[in-house]
Amino acid sequence: MTQKRPNILFIMADDHASKAISCYGAGLNHTPNLDRIADEGVRLNHCYVTNSICTPSRAAILTGTYNHVNSVTTLDTPIDNRGPNVAKHLRTGGYQTALIGKWHLGEGKAHEPTGFDFWSVLPGQGEYFDPYMIEMGKEIEVPGYATDVITDKSLEWLNQCDPDKPFFLMCHHKAPHREWEPHPKNRHLYQEDVALPDTFNDEYKNRAKAASEARMRIKDDMKYVDLGLVQPEGGAEVGERTKPGSTDRRIPNPEDVSNLRLIDRDTGEVFTFESQDELSHFKYQRYLKRYLRTIHSVDESVGRMLDWLDETGQADNTIVVYTSDQGFFLGEHGWYDKRFMYEESFQMPFLMRYPAEVPAGTICNDMLCNVDFAPTFLDYAELTIPNYMQGKSARSVLGGEVTEDWDQVAYHRYWMHRDPDHNAYSHYGIRDQRYKLIYWYNDGFDLPGTNQGGQDTEWELFDCDKDPLELFSVADDPAYAEVRREMLAKLTAKMAAIGDEPAHCE
Ligand code: CA
Image 1 (cartoon, rainbow, N blue to C red):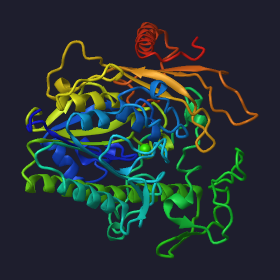
Image 2 (image 1 turned 90 degrees about the vertical axis):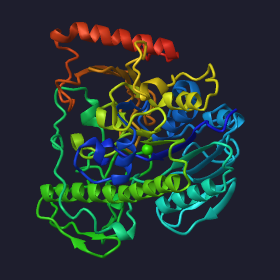
Image 3 (image 1 turned 45 degrees about the vertical axis):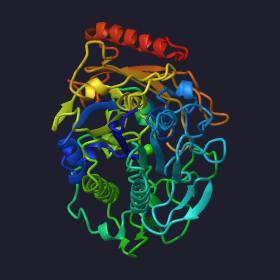
Image 4 (image 1 turned 30 degrees about the vertical axis):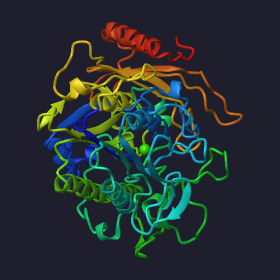
């Protein structure tokens, strides 16, 4: 073992879409500190999550395995912490290890973090203000704003590290997860209205029914509580289920909006509306601005971490990664949330700086998946990648050496069919550099008494070059019959390689 092995600083946000990082070029906001990682390192355009939801993504990152192997397929399947993970390998291999911030892989002795010398995590989703944390098994309350608290604790741990040994720190922010509560000092940011995405008023034609059935629309489904709003009558939150397990909901944008009064929870400001369109526009603006304001704090926090590396002379020998557990819809197709294999939620932002191997300003268009993270870290740490890991080390790819045998596909499977809150359909599929094939197998998580699993299964095929907004499935277009056959072959081969079972595949 040599002291030259790099430190690994892994910073992960929660639900941070790449479009809300300025170096990705969408023009929504300015994130100078995140951009600095890309400017001095590499920005990935095709990094993908294998299951676009918090808990399963975190399990894939930690273990380097797909969800049917690590058994963390849904939000309700906590990790079995007796299994191996990347932190355990790094710790055994001489690294000092810590995890600080969001965990969301379960609580209690069977599910709390293992493999870390120090851990301090938010229970569940955690709170934005004065969060409770479980620190080494003990509950504590920490005053302050969650993003600052997580950063302070991270720097505190880094400062007590032995400088003669490398460190591995997983710094996991809660932000920008809903309810998108910004730090009070940032509430004034982003006064200008944000342009609506081109697909905001998507009518969900020419595709599988999953898109029209999902209840993730900003206009119809977003809860006012997530926007920091209350209603004066104090009744049931509009948009919530009328009773547990029911699919009935009060309509969040009633036909007659003239009686609707929404009140800002922090300032008391009262909002009224003349039309549904006005209400819809208001909700979108409020959502985006709150989201971007919470990201402002994350960017500042990353700046503090980069400064610390500079001040302690460790910038050159530290791999800095910034990513998010998945992407997020920022009004595309009219949606918020994630879950789908459509590009906005499927793509993870991924920025990395490691001057020793990665030239500044590199743009990487090769395909990575979050199961590749763990083996990649072990490779950088000069440790053996264990056989159980299904991802591959991306070290050569990140360094700019694209090898012929690098697998340019990403596999996605979402298991929580028709969960009560979002009604997203279960599916699996594969994306390569040009096309995306999705099989909506529609099974697995129906509400009691409503099982429609396996009925009306559908295929979607998108030409990502010609139709980047994914508005026209060409699955049944004769001109794409050969492409569909090829993509099905890729999907079948991938599922066989990783051992995932097809679901009553046609
Ligand atoms: Ca998430």
